[in-house]
Each structure stands twice: as C-alpha cells, then as structure tokens.
Image (tube, rainbow, N blue to C red; front, side):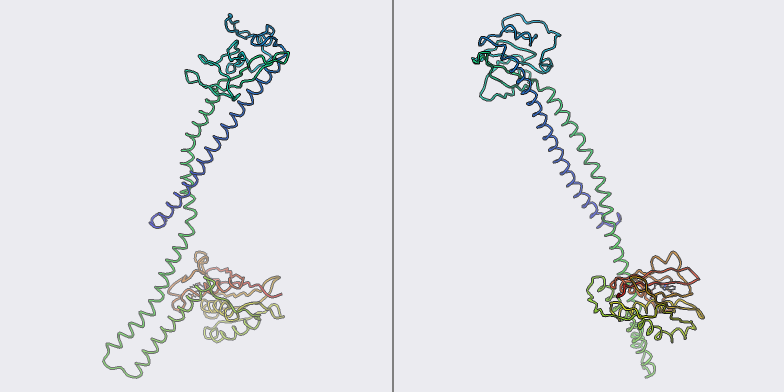
Length: 444
Ligand code: ADP
C-alpha cells in the first residue's frame, strides 16, 4: 500500500487530519482543565480566608472594648499579636485558637477606623501600607513581587460600636507554585500526547485505508482480467478477418467457415459482456428483480432434463434426488434461479471425468430450501477453494479454457444467491470431488 503514491498520500492526509483534530481537542481540553482547576483553587483560597476571618471576627468582637485600641485579652487568643509601637513578643509555640493563623502563609492586620495599622499577627507583606477599599477582597503585590490575597472586615466592640478593621490575608506563593507545576506538566505532557496521537493516527489511517486499497486492487485486477478475456475473442476475430482480406479468392465453403468462426467468437464476446453487465448491475443493485413464487421442484426437474444430454455425452451418471416430496416454493426470479443452479450443475459435469457421478439433491430445512450438487470429479485444492467465487478466477486456466469457462460462472451464482437472501457454500477435496450447497429462504 505504501508503494502506491495515491494511497500513501491519502494515508498521510488522513493521519494528518486525525492528528490535527485530536491535537486541537487535547489542547482545548488541557487548557480548559487547567482553567477549571485554577478557578477551583482560587475559590478554595477565598473560602479558607473567609472562614479564618469569620472565626477571628466572631471570637474577637466580644473581647473588644474601646474603639481603635487592642484590648489586653485579645492577646490571650492571639499570643503572637504584635502591637505597633510596642516590642513584639517572640514567636510563641502556644497554639492559637485559630490553627490557620499559625501557618506561615497567613497573616492578620488590625486597623483603626481611619485605616491606621495598630497590630499584626503572622507575616504580613513587607513594606505595604494597608488600605481599606470599597471591595472587601484585595489582591496585592509587595516590592519583591510576592502576591497576597486578603479580606477586610469591620469589627465592632462589645457595645456594638464600630471598633476598626480586621484584614486577614495569605500569601499566594503556594497557590502560584501549584499552578506553575500544573502548567509545566501540561507543557511537557502535551507534546508527548501529540507525538502519541500522531503515531496512533498513522496506524489507524493505515487500518482505515486498507479495505479501500484492497477494493482498489480488486477493481484493478478485475479490469485487467476483463480486458484479457475480451482480448482473446477480439484477437481471434481480427486474425480471421485479416487473413481473409489477404487471401485472393475464397470459396463459399471457406467463407462459411470464416463466418462461423467470427460468429463463435462474437457469441463468446456478447456472453462475456452480458455476464459482466449482470454482475455490475447486481453490485450496484440496479436490478429490480421481478420476483414471483417459483417452484424449486420444477426448476431442478427441468434443469436435469436439459443437461442430461450433456451428461450422457460425457458418460456421466446424472441423478436427481428430491428428499421432500411436497413442492418447495421460494419467492424469486425464475430465470435467475435457473441460471444459479445451471452454472453449478454445468461445472459439476465439466469437472467430472468420464463415468463419474453428479447428483442434484433438493431438500428443505426449517427456514430455507437446500440444493446440493455433489460430484466425484477432480475436486478443488484447499489453496484454490477460497478464491473460486472471485471474478475471472479459474483453478487452472488451461483446463477451464478448454471447457470454455471465463471464470465468471460461480461469481454470478453467488451474486444471484445473495440477491435472493441466500448463500452458496462449497466443500471439496482434490481428486475426490466437490459438494456445492445453495441455501435459499423459502416461502412458509
Ligand atoms: P469457469 O467458467 O471457469 O467454470 P467458474 O466461476 O464457474 O468459472 O468456476 C471457477 C473455477 O472453479 C473453475 O475454473 C473450476 O476450476 C473450479 N470449479 C468449479 N466447480 C468445480 C467442480 N464442481 N469441480 C472442480 N472444480 C470446480
């Protein structure tokens, strides 16, 4: 297949399209998954901050007394509280009621109602002047480019008056590191996935194009065989005509001989063309068979009678066995059914030597009628057996040509069986004979 430029190109194109589409789908899916993940992570950050800030707010409010001033008992629940202007306590190993505040990434700021910073907890961004904005959520960046996300809440004292503001924030370093890692994984895995998709595409395109290639080869073979079959009678006619034209005078008897030769070849040609036409029409399902109820008993009876003279000439014992005596009817085209059985029967006689036996058996099973044509002739080898229904296939060209066969008989028989929802099978052994079994759906 790869040696044929058209198919190689088609395979390449198919693989290219497949790989391209798959790569786009992979990229879009990868980027979407990344965005969904980043969004979910961001929401988790928000939820975490909201929960820490909410808990702090609820725990602190009952302890706050005077506005803009940190009450002493605040330090009981926040031992690491660092009040601006006072010396900060060293980091206390004591656990806060809020575990999250103890994490390195979290911090809390206390601001007066005018926005002045009065106390901190944890590690707030260095060199940043805290601001209270309209939006409680803020994402800020320090001088080093480290980003923080924070929430501002208004605190009230235990008398319900506004006390000042609480800002709870966290560093986004671990969030950004996580996203960075995901981005890196995506950047590394996407080209690997593209590579794998390309290899798989090439392989799948090969599988997809194989049946197309084999039908293309069959058509090529068929065209070559058809041309070859047509050439033989045409060459014979041409040679006869040329030799006649070259001879000075020809007698009446010679003219008759010449015309007979031309007639024989013309008949062969027209039969061949008719067979080819029939096959191609059946292939394209152009034939609308005029189906009627046909009696198989009558058809096989007529056929045996018709070919009996041929069997007698070849000293062959031709037998007809009808196992089921009530008539078997099938819905079909009588001419076609006649042709189907005739082709197989003639072959059995043709390929059975003198004093051999050919037996036609008619029976019926549950849902189908069965016609079996059995001979004890030359048989077919296991190598040839799978090909005998192929168009123009002849086991031995010389042997078949002597019998005048073109190798289309069984192909036509098979096509007719198919359009009658039936099938034809063969069992054969070289030197021992063959059994052809035709099954056709019969009328109930
Ligand atoms: P042909 O016109 O050559 O007979 P067919 O399509 O009818 O073509 O048959 C294909 C080939 O199958 C024949 O060339 C023949 O060699 C083989 N064949 C068919 N029927 C028999 C049979 N009953 N016994 C042995 N060979 C057979």
